[in-house]
Image (tube, rainbow, N blue to C red; front, side):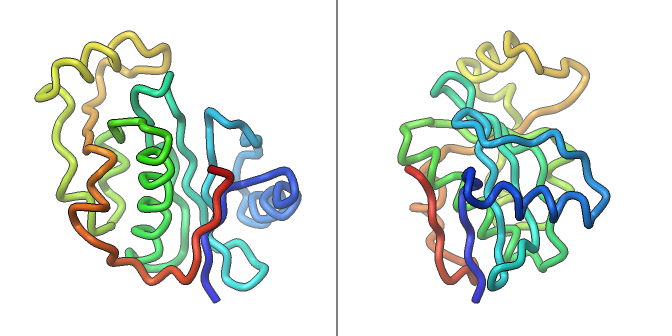
Length: 158
């Protein structure tokens, strides 16, 4: 059974083991402002999506790692977007390089410069890379597009 869970202290050791087995950096922690969504197949982690929530204004999709197909990536992204929508975070942002991932919602992302309010918020964000293009979508996008992923269950702390 496939499920997506927000990383918690109880699943953190399993997550660290997953990172070690895949030779990945262990610079991740359980943090309410940097939620990590983990894709489980049974009890085994098969991928994750890390995000950063910025002052209830926008959330940045950071790292998407999974060896599964685009429908599982879609499930991770939809779980993160749904959590943002529930927290009333209006915008989902990602770097252009993130869009190299194949997932159904990527066609709904637009360049940030078309949204002047979001662009001004992002430009003062401390980790903003001025030489990179950023893209955004609204957090209600999953309610406009319907459910397309193959995920059996999604669990979060929200």
